Amino acid sequence: MAKQAPGKVDMEKMVSLCKRRGFIFQSSEIYGGLASCWDYGPLGVELKRNIKEAWWRAVVQRRDDMVGLDASILMHPQTWVASGHVEGFADPLSECKACHLRWRPDDIKDGKCPACSGELTEPRLFNLMFKTSVGVVEEEAAELYLRPETAQGIFVNFDNVLTATRNRLPFGIAQIGKAFRNEMTPGNFIFRTREFEMMEIEYFVRPGTDEEWLQYWTEERLNWYTGLGVKRENLRLRQHGPDELAHYARKCYDIEYLFPMGWSELEGIANRGDFDLMQHASSSGKKLTYFDEESGEHLIPYVIEPSAGVDRSALAFLVDSYEEEPDKEGLRVVLHLNPTLAPIKVAVLPLSRNESLLPLAKDIYAQLRQRWMAQYDDAQSIGRRYRRQDEIGTVLCVTIDFQSLEDQAVTIRERDSMRQIRVPIEELKRTLEAKLGGEPFDVLPPGGTKWLGFTDS
Ligand code: ATP
Image 1: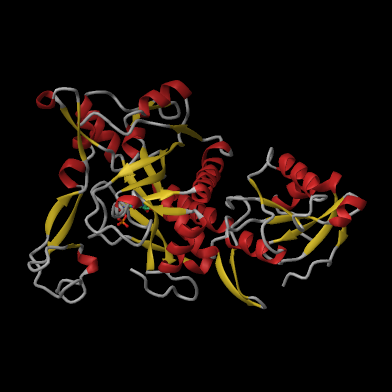
Image 2 (image 1 turned 180 degrees about the vertical axis):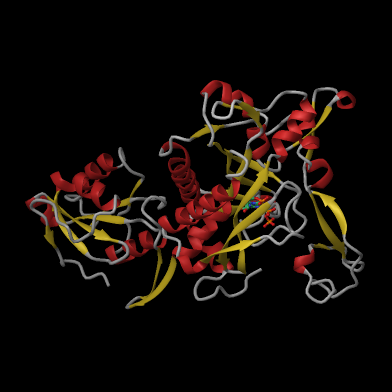
């Protein structure tokens, strides 16, 4: 699994940091673990929530052409017949005749089993959908699938949303939710798992304008990642060749990220044409058309689908923000997470456990956590505590010292530059708000000073 990352963090180091600091744990670990399933711990759940909220703000809240949906995971089984998943959602896999491991063609290098160099069978198709049964009496229970993508929940609700919102083309529907795929070769930490979360948009457009919108969304989605701090040189676009296009796609781009194991898909943006609406219309017998007032015609819109993984995004954000810097104590590990994504925005640190400092420190902590995810830490030296916060990406640390009792001012220390400013307590909330919102750290509030009292670097 762990090849050295190009330049910085390898996967083993990332897995270990995530476990140690409470981002991500192996699922069911006390029972020996369940392969390729992961649990998000106290910090991981915040990171994931911040990613989903940032996505929702960008693609729903701040746009007037998008609405949201939350469809159920279990759907009528006919959905998956119509969508082509029962027939076509399968991976070709070759099985090793010696160790019986199965491999995707892109994992096989020299025609031999990558694990034991044994002889491989010809590839066979394995459907990736999980089956489950619903009902009390086993024999009468209906067989259903756990959805392998959220998209179909959007297509089957197309007419409901259209009627309820009276949206005009072009418009889109966005959805975040769990999806399940019985991946034969899961791995690389949270990169490919059997249960994962997707953030999907189905954007409905007039046929003929689809190419333009595909370009638009590709650009828009790339900008979303870079806007949240992912380095542009670690992202690239790759167009699918005709032989790798999914059964529904007319054209598709992958946004790839330079993960520790190499360039791999982060998000797919596909032009699905009218495939899905046509299929569901003919399979259900319902009309899934749009009345175009301009032309006076009923038409079936084309669909552009930007489809992203929450977990893969989380991995990309973590890897991209990781940095090790030598310092006088050895090594400073920092997650330079964008403030929007950082699990903890601010930490409150009394200089020592001296009793005279605690009431003020606790009072400030109680106030700040009304507004932000905050942490309080008074264990060990201030330098150690800064390092602990750096390692989890906490953006700002507020330090309360003995002078604070005299001058009613505290120190704010910035994660990335390690610089410090001293601000009156009455300006603290406003200052934190401004800094977390992107104001340069040097800009001081009324009564604030650049402060160099702690030696921290
Ligand atoms: P891959 O070929 O890497 O398995 P895919 O092309 O099948 O991915 P899509 O069907 O395009 O993936 O899914 C859209 C997005 O959902 C992916 O870009 C990825 O971010 C996420 N995703 C898909 N499968 C998984 C998985 N098994 N684990 C985690 N995320 C996934």
